[in-house]
Image (cartoon, helix red, strand yellow):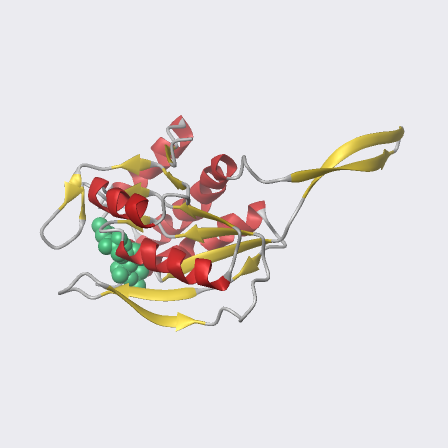
Length: 208
Ligand SMILES: O=P(O)(O)OC[C@H]1O[C@H](OP(=O)(O)OP(=O)(O)O)[C@H](O)[C@@H]1O
Ligand SMILES: O=c1cc[nH]c(=O)[nH]1
Ligand SMILES: [Mg+2]
């Protein structure tokens, strides 16, 4: 399987275009991010395992399927926070484990500032949520942390990736699938995705 999947669904692309638009204010940006995340997860969850179970309907006995294994959502602060609510609509019982990473503006290296993952893994599947994969440093660092935690199945779910970042990510974690709505042209000299959408954290929270 190609480990990078671009979700080209028309509804996803419609919402992504509004997210990119510099006129979109933070309130609408947050709403769009909440709306688009379940659509991304729909595609990113095809490989989840199920088990056959009996089900009693008002009309009698039937057979059904139930998801197997606990799901963890791992938003990368800050921007990944905006994807949590939409992801919880898909997995209301998921555990949410936050990772705090920011990119040093000068070196573009990720700096970890929050990680309360317990010693032992508590989930089987882990969906790492971050709208932007630019140089790939933050995504690689997040997967490093989740792998050290010991989760067997890890998937990265984002909105926009840069080709440079995807190459770096594939080099570091070829086993981890990446689902995004777009792969853009390139990174500018400051490490921003072009055309991208700007700083996803600032656009959500009205900062910067
Ligand atoms: O692929 P990279 O080059 O590592 O860049 C991507 C990272 O940059 C953004 O976070 P940022 O550092 O702006 O932190 P913030 O979400 O707190 O604004 C974004 O949400 C990613 O985490
Ligand atoms: O374009 C970019 C690059 C990194 N982080 C963002 O939020 N946007
Ligand atoms: Mg930011």
